Length: 342
Ligand code: NAD
Ligand code: TYD
Image (cartoon, rainbow, N blue to C red; front, side, top):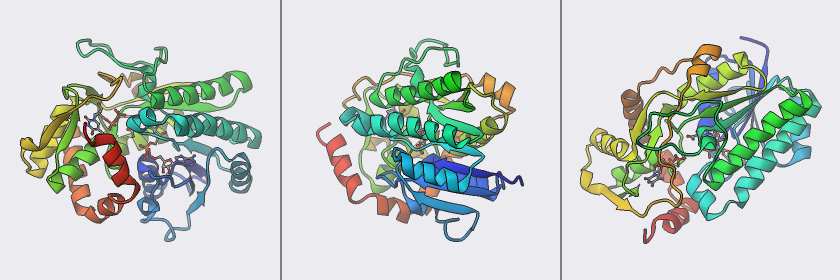
């Protein structure tokens, strides 16, 4: 075990909480400072396994756009690496209202980069996304590689591209040590049920319609969240400053195939599938070329999609209480706004 403190923003969200658990369970560092505002998507229950039970984990409820609070935490905790995951993360919400996306994803990243530089934090890892590259054609063999220009299509992706470019600018202008990861769609435990896979599991279990956008043929390139988290560690430890690394697991699937596979796993009928009005500007296909990460980070994914999907479905079945507690309040009004009359 090394004597390092890692600061993780967005630690109470889906990927952040999985990252914190793995980092502590496998002694990737000796202290984790978790920072999260606890928006609708942040859930302290996600950290329950360690929080208050393991003195290697500290939690600060802080907004990443709050420069003075961030400066104070950096002065107090002196992290060796910042893993910046905090973000507004759902494309549909960004179409409804982009303002919080600009605030958190753009301003928040700038505040954190500036504070990290002034505090002399040795390394800043920005968790970007493959959505910064825009969309690929269904009938092409092309995949995203790091040399492509950033041509995002949704407000979410545009805000992430801005944060990605701000990190590269901090490296170029100030020589700040910055590493960027651009990962494809994640699935696994603790994912907020506004996203495709947990939403479909939740509705299938409840016997409610499964809303598939458009023709259901949009393709996403799925990766198990634990493989993404291991890639974040590898990028922080072996990534070159100023470089971006694509992270993906070679699992391109049309949405309808994913939904049908889930129905099979859960033993529910395909008659639950309901094709609904498409998402405006819906990116057709994402596909990741992760050769650079394999070569330079020594990272390889471990979880085959079929096994990962089965284990994920079972996790949601075994944690029905977690899902039930989310399926109230804000989530209900969101669901009504997003899906009623679609
Ligand atoms: P999530 O929505 O589950 O979690 C985001 C977390 O950030 C929440 O806990 C939320 O409370 C916190 N947060 C939001 N605004 C904040 C603010 N102003 N200050 C502090 N905390 C704030 O998202 P996720 O799926 O875990 O994604 C984490 C990161 O990974 C994001 O940066 C996202 O863009 C990126 N990413 C996600 C995926 C994916 O498939 N989920 C793929 C590639 C990249
Ligand atoms: P999502 O999980 O929102 O991730 P992203 O838009 O960031 O890729 O959606 C994954 C795919 O599933 C995307 O093509 C949109 C589609 N989708 C549906 O068909 N129905 C739904 O209810 C949701 C949430 C997504």
